[in-house]
View 1 (spheres, one colour):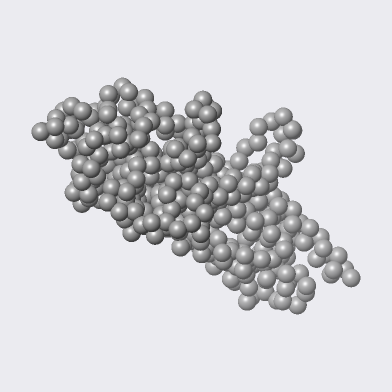
View 2 (cartoon, rainbow, N blue to C red):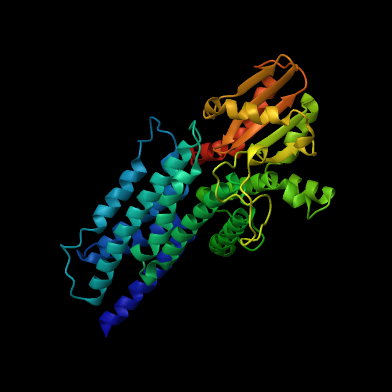
Length: 429
């Protein structure tokens, strides 16, 4: 009976610890397990050993949620130090052979240590994923679809890796993070193929998960600061919110034509202005100031089996395979008129097709001047199938800084270069 009562006490302690960890109360959790370990310092059993492990876990989780593993190496910071900490934690959790497994508490702790080892392994995989994602900030190629299998696998397998009821808060936090990342990357891949409904659903799912996860952090802040204080959340969570906001801005641009059918011009303008980045206003302002004939985003749908056209299309509706000029739809243009009104539109598509090799270099800005027509084209690849095209009815210089800066800014924002680069600097802020 005494053993059962003792186990209940330890289980309650662990439940409080894991709840606190999920709420990002890392210092409070570390203090609690350090105190518990000191209270039992004269014992050599498995319980004090677990307390030391949980103290280390609180420290590593604090650094992880602050994205410190992505902060550039410096004189005072060893490269991959957090990776080493998680790997050490994983190995320490596997050292259970030296402890007896005679009591109910022994069996509980051994089981928990085994699952904590699995959690540390999953964290290491997720850290590797963030490192790949941050590398896209400086990559000359940008195909997010390549990363989807890894994050989908992590999201789907976490449930079976660490499933003990006491670890439920930690498992939920890990699952929210993986699901949000998965939805955001899925949404951006769907947008890159101009798939309206799948992208919209993924963004909505992202928001639902963010709202649910945010409530866990708010529980801590409500108790500590009172109802009228602004809740704080870890850097990783804040970065995910920024990524979501930029994805919504991108969605608004890519499907501007669709959204305009269900809204008044003024309401749509207000909606765009509320986004974290108002791409539409940015492009329209540049087009007027630079006196461009058109600023357009052109999609190449050749071989794109998922292409259904703009907006929602019933899945059973037969769709003819686009051919010729129709296989290069313009998904956005400024001024807001049909780009087909330009009589030389076929030459635009021909230029895009002829310079496909140059455009495969995402950093390259392709310049074409038509001497006969005194017309200038600037082209730059945004995503694997999407190209930004600027058209001028006069000769413009190839290195004109205002044009070059605008194109680099827009393309880098849309392909996620800036937001992924932010990962490397977030932890130091």
